[in-house]
Each structure stands twice: as C-alpha cells, then as structure tokens.
Length: 96
Image (cartoon, rainbow, N blue to C red; front, top):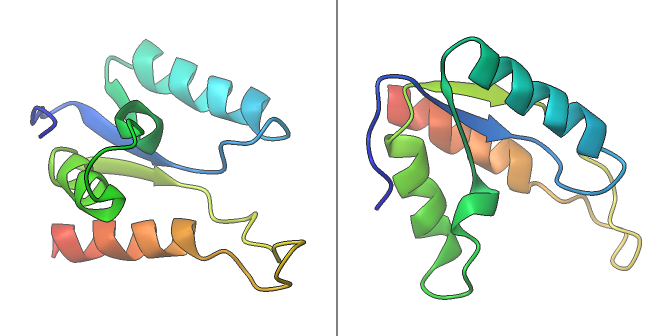
C-alpha cells in the first residue's frame, strides 16, 4: 500500500508518447511546488488487482490533478476508454 502523505498529489492523465511532454510538465510543477507526484505508473508491476492498487494510491493522496481531455475512441474496438474518468470518479468518491 502506498504511504500516505499530506503532500501527495495523484496525477490522472494519459501515459502515451503524445502526452509525455505534458506529463513531464505536470510532474515538474508538482515537485517544484513542494508536493509529491504520484500516479498509476508507479504501481504497474503486473501482480495483484490493478483497480485495488489505484484505489490504494488514491487513498494516499489528498490532492489530485485530472486531465480527462483525451478520453477518445479506441482504434481497435471503436469504444471509448473510460479509465481516466473512472479514476476521477474514484478520487472524488474517496474525498467524499
């Protein structure tokens, strides 16, 4: 389980190469402002249930940055990928 920190910020955004420069800017800004940047990438170890890992990480973060602007259709299935809006919903539910 991720360590709880009063300065932890959960970053919820795309992790593909097209978004990399924005992700780097978000992480830089969070760290430069004295906070701890946290995201699902740090728990992608292939073991356990991914949603449980994400919920534990969200529980450890009192703050969050959510960029869901790239919720788009998957080219293979032609269905939207709703993982980022789902993580936003989990984060808001956890804060409630």
